[in-house]
Length: 209
Image (cartoon, rainbow, N blue to C red; front, top):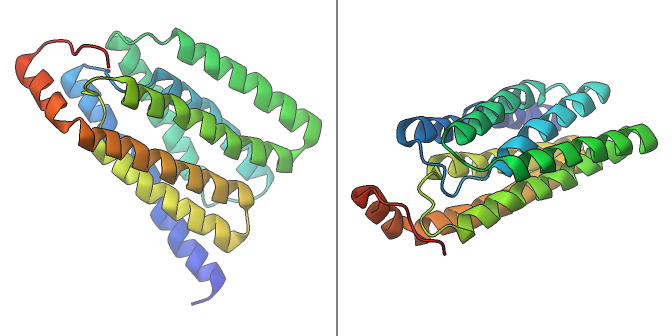
């Protein structure tokens, strides 16, 4: 198998995972209406950063991830709306998203496409931080979907591999940071499984950690 063929196979698999990764989280929020453990900042930054990736990918003529970014952008927008509807405080998330727009626009205009790609990869670190903080600070992260984060782990591993194959460092960095974040959040979900069951069975609001 040639490198180009391997990149195509990995890219298609990663695209499929990206397109479906937020579905379990959206379903959980729709079904339960409880946002505990899910970060609005993560959702807002998901919209902003995927918009930035779309611009970067088109400019660099890297077409494989374009569909995935577009679908993810819509998925994060729906997730944010559901969090808002469920009563989550979204003000800090909106402020963080606005700041990200300004920073990415300045980097892209001032230093070009390569710098924007690197900034987007670094921005993914910022995107995942609110999720990690929300998951680990919440007594019982009832709103978190383990399926979404398991899919995200597989998806980011796929994009990391794709980035290696096509020699795109920003995509590799995105994959690495996403894998680390996914593992940390899945660990938190596993550690609090008993609390989540108790909260769901009792129907009360969990105390803060």
